[in-house]
Length: 319
Image: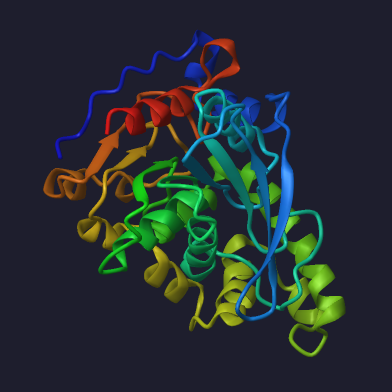
């Protein structure tokens, strides 16, 4: 499909990618979203917490929302979408990945950009409720990579899944990791690393035979974290092997249902190969929109409803 023209007009202040990224991540608030938590058990005995919010009217439509690195179901980019869809007669389930719902998960492993086996469990759980005929999925950043990989690595997906939207997607994990290690992104890098290492310290206490204090203290960068923990805990040879196997870029040609990718051109987290122009032009199911502004998940718009949220609703409504 040809690359789509974007109609996003960022407020003047939010034309700065860093301002839009930081404001949207640390300042924005979304109120009046009532969530009900459901815990499901995974095949390996671990658990996921799902936070549901509902339309006032009974509906057979639902959107599954996937957060980004070190996010959770209460992040404004999650609740903002849930609120908008609830107000348009669509239920929403915000997924907390392993260890992201306020308590550590049970296993040594946790979540990562390519953990589609956990997403598959969530999708099947939602479909098996026999309430929903139309299922939509929206993934943000890491969650966007995960759902695009899910779509492309399978010969078929459940017929109930009608459309997917992915926002601020690091389609090339290696490229995005490289960008996060640049001086421009030092503050973001250090913040992510601190959260990840703090979480790993908790795991080290529970699994001292898997991770020594010396190894834990050797983590100075996100590269180190992915080599020391992500790769070893999830069956990859190295951090680079993890990036290679799990980047969604290679799976885009196989996507068979309508899929919208929204990646801002001034997103400092994304390398040039995170903009899959060729793949979108060659696959009629993949729609790529590249707004000039928006930073990383920072598409601020009127009335505290973000452009990517409006756009997701508009995209699925046209199907």
